[in-house]
Amino acid sequence: MANTRGRRTAALSAVLAAGALALSACGSGETTGTSPAAGGASTATPKIAAVIKGLDNPFFQTMKQGMDEQAATAKAPVTVQAANAITDTTGQADKLNGLAGQDFSCYVINPISGTNLVQGLAQLSAQNKTVVNIDSPIDAAAAKSANVKPATYIGTDNVEAGKMAGQRMTELLPDGGEVAAIGGIAGDVTSGARIEGFQQGIGPEVKVLQTVAANWERQTALTAATDVMQAHPELAGFFVANDDMGLGVARAVANAGKTGKVKVISVDGIKDALNAVKAGTLDGTVAQYPYAIGLMGVEACQAAAAGKTLPTNVKAPVELVTKENADKALAATPKPFGSYDDPFTSLIK
Image 1 (cartoon, one colour):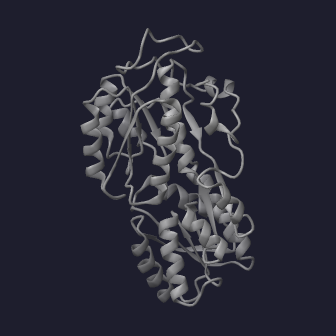
Image 2 (cartoon, rainbow, N blue to C red; image 1 turned 120 degrees about the vertical axis):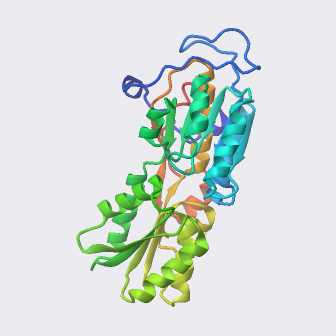
């Protein structure tokens, strides 16, 4: 398929043996015949609904692009709805509740918090609809309590992404120093995992002095970073849990006349951040690929409609972008510049 160029197919045997859920095809109004056994040919076309975080953030705009392009390739209709903002937990839940009563066969969901979509997902599970969880995981305890059983999870290993950033910060601060961490919403699983990974990745001479929540917002992060630098004039760097906030922190550092002196590393790999890395106003970003995550979410629905067994957990690609490889990353964006494993490729052939 045209959109799989540059991706290599993973060997599935080990993944499938690790407790993957067998899924029967979900009927969609467009499905003809009966659901085939795993490995058989299928005429099933999934009718897909997706509920993602706010399209005010370029990360989720790119995620939608991956969904839309794969849906067009597969000729599988997809309806994508998003929260009004990345903090709009109630609005996002309302979007899912509205879609849950419609005749979609597969739901791709990217929750703002670990619990805000659980009520709607419980309704879907009761209807035996396929649920594909992407990017931000559903809280395991809440899901179990509500009898919600996602067919697969596709997302970044956020601890590993944070660890890569920590290792890079240590390289940039060979003599050590004090740094601050700027996180998203307080208590957010994704933000917490990235900060945890960063703390694991830094060397013993680099110390995390303070952690501040900036609600995933650029202006909030700019203000927070300004306050932190005023309180700690010897601060050597910032780790920032996403690029939008990272660009706000980079602006605060520039306003203080400390670009290049106070190091800033963030996570996401949005185009503006890649350009900032190239320009030297951002010292690095751990690029994850929402395009690939969205694309694989649609592929998972295709595979489920064909009666295939889905892997329980799929790691999305991550790549460290520095000034040395920023041009390469920019040329490939929104796709990864290296190869990565996509276990769904062989399932939908």
